[in-house]
Image 1 (cartoon, one colour):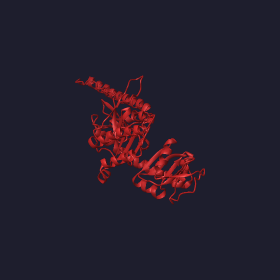
Image 2 (cartoon, rainbow, N blue to C red):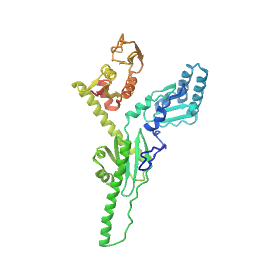
Image 3 (cartoon, rainbow, N blue to C red):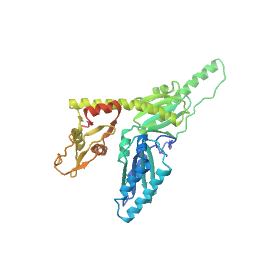
Image 4 (cartoon, helix red, strand yellow):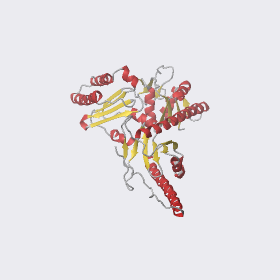
Length: 400
């Protein structure tokens, strides 16, 4: 995988590592899928939960085959059926002979007539789902990508520096030549040696400033949400001191590792920092929703009020407990969403009095609405999850 960063100042490439863990996914990488709209059905999209528990409960091959056969039974047109069976064969061959149990969800996109085949191992489980149509079904993947933040990572010592992107549980390295500003060593003694040591310190300082310039240039293009600095000794702090204030404000943490550290080491170090940040952010978001909702300050709690805010397009951040599902209704006329804890079907849409159709998981539909409206998702776990379930069970921070 290669990503062009800027043209006038050279081309930087981004190299991923799939030795273990997840496949590296970026918005740029999905763009080629998003723009595909076939003249007729020919794209198969498959999401399969591959957590250890699910793999034990029902064999993977059996679950995938059941989804494929269920969809095949719906098709009657001869040419479309042939296209589907071609995609089905490719998917089953992958499951039987090439599947690796990495990550927590397997996503496959297959369009045989376009010679399109994409496989992603993702860091969070997604419910088993198959779609067949004229475009890729990307909703679960886009939701997942919205939830995770992009981390810029710098690993350096006094002579060299390396630059990385950490995202969706995976790390990839920007293919920038490592800086090597190592001045020649000297054996001079006396005043000459002191002058050289002073000059040496100046060169090291110059190295940190050059690294800071590269970080700034990368950030201008990549716009990471957070920054992590790694290295031995005081090197991360020395770099922090010469970074612009805007980048210093993004620093989520530092870690100790040699500049030669492998991908696994870097991934594990940043993942630990990410977990700490996530726990703090989730707890803060949940408390903000609860407090502001009780005060009537641009926040709502509860299914009914949250669905109403989604309908109005007012949701800035939708806060949902991980794994939470709830049935509800969608208006066929205005698209409005309706749900409450009583689970009683209203006689008509409360917004326009149009007819309602049932939705098994109204939360999933609401999440997609929020993304379509330019909002964001916060899926919370652990103590924050228990807190919002008790007070909500869902809530939202509003734009106005």
